[in-house]
Amino acid sequence: MAHEVVADMAANVWKVLVSEGANVEAGETLVILESMKMEIPIDADVAGLVTSVGVEEGGSVQEGDVIAVIAVVE
Amino acid sequence: MDTQPDADVNKVADEKLQAARLGGPEKYRQRQLDSGKLLVRDRLERLLDPGFRVEDGLLARFEQGLPGDAVVTVIGKIAGRTVCVIANDFTVKAGTWGHKTFEKITRMQDVALEIGAPLIYLIDSAGARIDEQFESYAGRRAWGNIFFNLVKLSGKVPQLCALFGPSPAGSAYVPALCDLIVMVEGQSTAYIGSPRMAEMATGEKVTLEEMGGARMHSTTSGLGDVLVPDEVEALAVLRRYLEFMPSSWQGDPPVVAARPPAPHRPIAEIVPERENLAFNMHELVAAIVDEGSFLEMKALWARELITGFARIEGRGVGVLANNSRIKAGVLFPDSSDKAARFVWLCNAFGIPLLFLQDIPGFMVGSAVEKQGIIRHGAKMLFAVCEATVPRIAVMVRKAYGGGYLAMSGSPTAPSAVLALPTARPALMGPAAAINAIHAKRLEAMADLDERRRFVMEKQSEYSAEVDVFQVASDNSVEAVVPGDELRAELASRFEIYCRRPAGRQERRNGVYPV
Image (cartoon, rainbow over all chains, first blue to last red; front, side):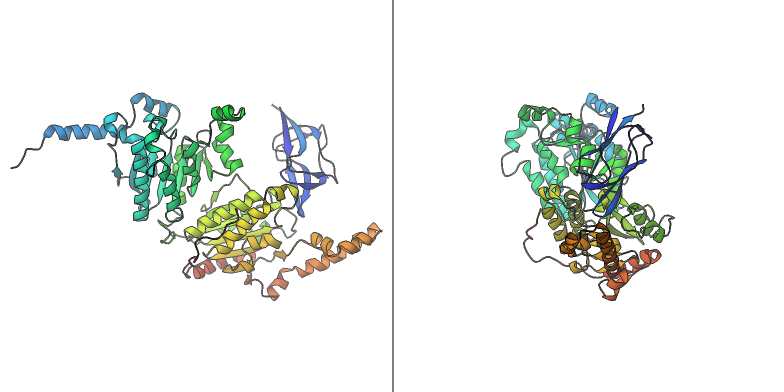
């Protein structure tokens, strides 16, 4: 099952820590956003295989944008 | 001439009273149990202290086969204090409201107000009984009186509700008008129109759980205050919440025996000095308050602001704390709403307020402007400025701009503002400030390295100015308090400030920005 990790607020993309094909644990930080001068780590809420990363460093996201898609390991 | 008492009538009375206490027919009682729900009288036994019961209208409509007209109205005790309870009986006509139901409910509402006791609604009802609508809908004495009374009682006696079943259409306003709404996961629902009605009206296809389920209301709509796994836990939450409340607005909230906080790391370790690093605000709250006393409200909704009741040296306080781990701790429309509602609740019942500030400000951008961030932020500011209970704000870290004011900053006349050594009070953060102050000059700098050097230099100058000791030197805060002295300082100050009688408003009502 594909699980989408979504931005919960508008922000700049500061660091991207995973790439497509990576296996991640639940709670592992995927991306660090920066908004209102705060670092906002975006963690995987499920374990699985990262099938796509929708952001790049220096870019920006709006609330609701997909940051990454994780294929959940059953 | 004396008449002999009729032995048969007494026997009949006993039988009828006993039968009425059972509620609806056996098959509906079994169905209630099979669906994992408690019978109404079992709920009451778990909610109330044993023994003391004063019940009204047990035999209402018994002769028509509707014992109590599907509702139990009873006065009992919780932790020795008198409480009034209105509890639907789903085994009688699905707990629907008939004309005696509404009479019994409104009567108990009046009694609660007259005797100054909290009122608890245990809701499990399919709504108004449609075949009785003509005698109980449109007139001056009709179902709508229930909502009218909820509003009349609001802020005078605590009104608590646990939602144990559906709460459709108009009856959804009963929980909505209560101070506290506890919802049971997978069981409680509240909605204006059912999925079937929605499909008829608009073509939308949606499940009941998505439309008005407990989880949806606790995470998305913000209607639910506490989400619990089962009914027993819901009843326990009602009892716990009541420990923080006075019986009426004229009474004092109960003070209990003090307990030290749970074992914790030093506050200097919990709060990072680097202001752009998120930290666990719940850990800081736990380090300040009596162990096990924190009862969080709306924990799953607008989580960037934590709200809840706790005790400091046995005294109940309402806590509002910015949570940097969620949405950077920034105030959004929903979190502003959550704050305003919580402040109104605490102020109504004389519960002092503690603000833990780590606030980068209100959110910026066109998305939140369209959602009315100004309106909602103004509502929060209004509630805080208007609150007359003792208020203490603690600058934990960031205390920027309008967010600082809304979090009970000094200009809003709190009892005190304290600062931890990590406090960073300013109109805005260093980077935003330097960009704003030197915008023209920065634009004119072609050399990027030169621009970066200039920004760094100005930012560090600015940072030095927002130093906590500058603010203390300006006498803008009452005290700078080392982290590990914070709890003791708060306890002493709340004790002092609670001596002051709460003020009263002298106007009809403010013109609330909502």
